[in-house]
Image (cartoon, rainbow over all chains, first blue to last red):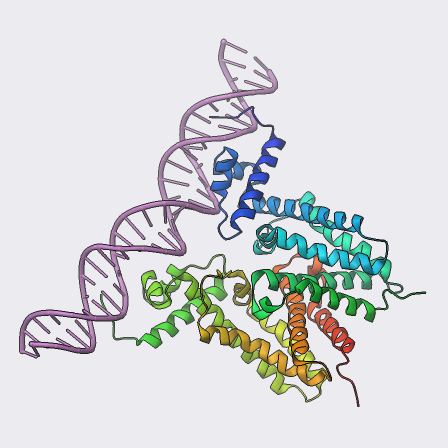
Length: 204
Length: 204
DNA sequence: CACAAAACTAAACACTGTTCAATTAAAAAT
DNA sequence: ATTTTTAATTGAACAGTGTTTAGTTTTGTG
């Protein structure tokens, strides 16, 4: 068959991402199959190559969707949190872990997919990825009294890396960290220690 | 051909691990091929399944070798370091990053290989993995004054996770963390802040 | 209505991992 | 010294991949 009228270009794009995301959540990165994803959408692999330019483009799109869901998850948690800065940071870290645990495979796929430096990430996708950093930036900046914005941004990235490390080692089951019952609690404790070192939460 | 006399069982095992490790360092986890590794060793895939029981066993063996090299790298760095606890911690963090950068693909393969919980890791391999934690434990314990050994162990794992997070995000190129020029420095700063929060480096 | 462009498929290619019967070489038994 | 047994190794098969390309079908347009 040729061009089908049952889906517009955008609908098809969305459908393929949805099916791909579902399959990724179900099987994980290693057992993901573009063929199978297309099959579930009622199409053939070739279509994926048409729409996304290649497998990398497709995986980027799928992972970007995960980023969007993740950001929403964090924003939702922050909405329910109080206005106390320390409480908001805790909510943020807890929500970070919750999302990763709830969406194990999809979350891990983000880091499983190694993007070749030669390939360029579409603006829209890059934005979805940076949105997450933006949320953390916004919340952390409130608590940090003095210091240049650049220094603050560096710290934000470092804090994200800190939480990421705990979360990643936890979910991959690496190390005997498995025996750690509350990795989120440990990550939070470290974040708090670091932030206090930078005179955050300083009561006036 | 049948049984060959050109390699004993142990030699063959070692040869296959060497070739596999080399290929892993060269191509990375995603493009690793057991067939190709066996080919380089002068054997066929089947032999890998004979010797290691399956692909998982082979990958575990390859990654365990990386752990051994990593531990050695850290010990070497510590040998060259002074006796000052703070300096030793710095040497440890720096060496951690150096090894990961120098052995990018092999290092990442450790975390790329998701081991099914059903499969059991051979004692020897488990030991190689735990050795690394042991080194950190030994060095950190010196600086931590009070506190139960269990609490200390939890902190050690948490510190490892902290450094791991920085290193992983750096090497995967995730986030705009790429723009960070000295991720090792950031990781070290966080480690120091955390340790000071736990009254480490307390001068008597 | 004819045509050109776009969407989509089907099939091919060169690879995987995994299994297993068949072969070969060495060790053990006669 | 021969035969038998046992174990190591291969080769071929199977069902999957990702990727490319020629071809077919559908649609919008001249």
